[in-house]
Image 1 (cartoon, rainbow, N blue to C red):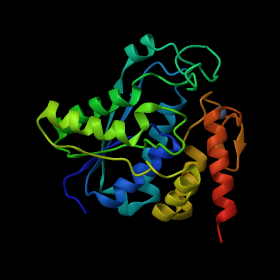
Image 2: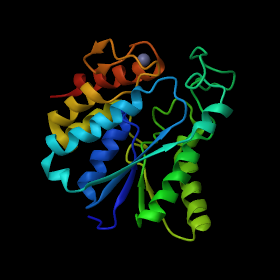
Image 3: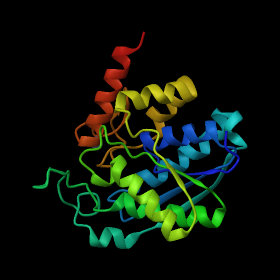
Length: 234
Ligand code: ZN
C-alpha cells in the first residue's frame, strides 16, 4: 500500500475502469485524468463522468480514496491526426497494418500531460491501461515504449515517476476476470452498463458485454473477451 497517491489515465472505457479499480485497491489517494481531442463522439467523456460518479456509491470503501478529476482538452491532436476517431473516415486497416483509429503518439502525449499534472499534485505513480496483448498494433502501448518513456520523464522532470500498466500482459478475457477479482459482480456490471469502448460511439445496441455497435474492432475485442471469460468461469 502506497501513501503516495496515483493518477489514473481514465477514459471511461473498460480497460481504464479496471485500472482505476486496481489503483483504488492499492493507493490511499487516487486522482483521474481524461483527455478530449475532437473525438468523433463525446460519448467517452460523458460515460467517464458517469462511471466516476458511480464508484463512491457502489464501492463505499473506495469513496475516501477517490480524489480530483482532471479533464484536459488536446484539440490540436485531433487537428493533426487524419484518423477515423477524429475525421469522418471509415475505420479500416492502414497499409502500416494499424487500424485507422490510431492517433500517432497519442499515448506518449497522454503520459507526458499526466506526468505534468502528477508533478503539480505531488503524485508519484501514473496508472494507465496500455496493453500489448490486444493492443491492435499501437506501438506506443508496448512495454518497451512505456519503459523508455518512464526513463525520459524521470530525466525531463528530474523526478522519478512509476508508470504502472496493470493490463500490459492481460488479454480482454483477463481484464474481465480482473474486474471480477477487484470489485466482483458490481464492478463487472458497472463496466457492462456504463463504460464505453465502441469506436463509433454507439449506445443504442445493448449486448451481454455492454453497449456498442458490435462490429467495430473495439466492440469485437470486447465481445470476444467477454465470451472467453464467461466460457472459462466455473
Ligand atoms: Zn463498436
